[in-house]
Image (cartoon, rainbow, N blue to C red):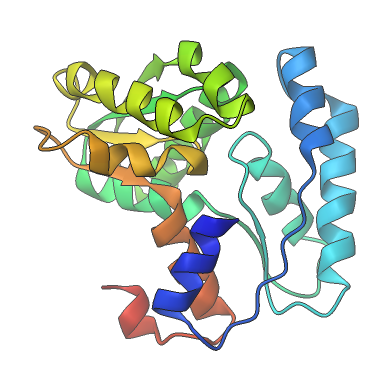
Length: 212
């Protein structure tokens, strides 16, 4: 939540944010080893309930559950988006071989599918490589964020040697890009790109600013 508050203060100071945390949905997905029909339905119901609560745009910041936001968007009267769609669109514009980095295994397949979908929509041919850093996930669960980000950063250099561009599949991974130092390829993460697009949709920033 702090990440998005900081982005709001920087990009769209007048925009009011309301955060809803549903750890139960991600926990159920972890336990099942992937997204189940029941969790899919519960996620869509939660997003649609938020869409009816007076917001101008609803953003799902969990990449594992992100596809459910785009399903819910078809039934909502306001925009409902996943935080990582703008990142995926940017990735396929910039690279042919894209590395997807995740600290949680169930996030890999949804992010791969997202990038492949963005590529198909853009008429681009891309190849996706997966890099799982699951040994650092316990640090995140225990609130040791410095260790979590440092562990990810330490692995990005090797992954970068095998691709044209890296994407950090989980919003929580974003600070690791700064810690990794100078890498041989670009590293994209979803918070800044996704928040800027959401703010544009909400009318809080101009299209020109969103494209910077």
